[in-house]
Length: 203
Image (cartoon, rainbow, N blue to C red):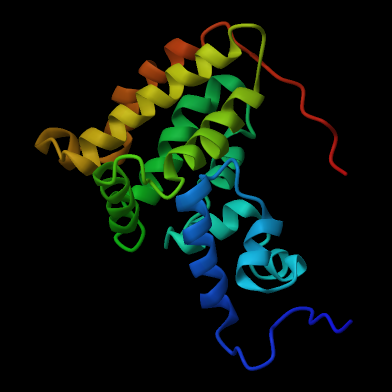
């Protein structure tokens, strides 16, 4: 049996081929139910090639949807601090990304495209559920941790929608630090009294 590993012979644009398979698979099955093995099978490549080029399923999704950042990894970085610093760190990270003239328009277009295709979001909704809300839930201990995480995400979603999607003039024009000062207390309310979950040691 002759199994070809890595790039297929005669198929020079393997990356584009993989991303086409990713888009179809996310559209059909959603983010949570899509596996790297299924994508590799659809694309006709070895699953190791996906990890080599994209590192993870999140990396595949962001590449396929032309999202030039990995929100989950950025959120993890923002949360690597004492819990009382989370509101300002989360907002500062988000505003830095969404205000970037190269990145912000892509994110806004992704949101608008997903909202316009009811029932066919390409897995964007599940991506946010898993990579953002899921990561935040994992960082909060206690029985109320999930509810607190939902409250934080709802507040963030309101800020992003008002500033970048609806573009409320006052909010859209507000300097980053002023917006952080105004919006951070709304996030802090959901974290008041919360306990960070213990993280497993690296390795």
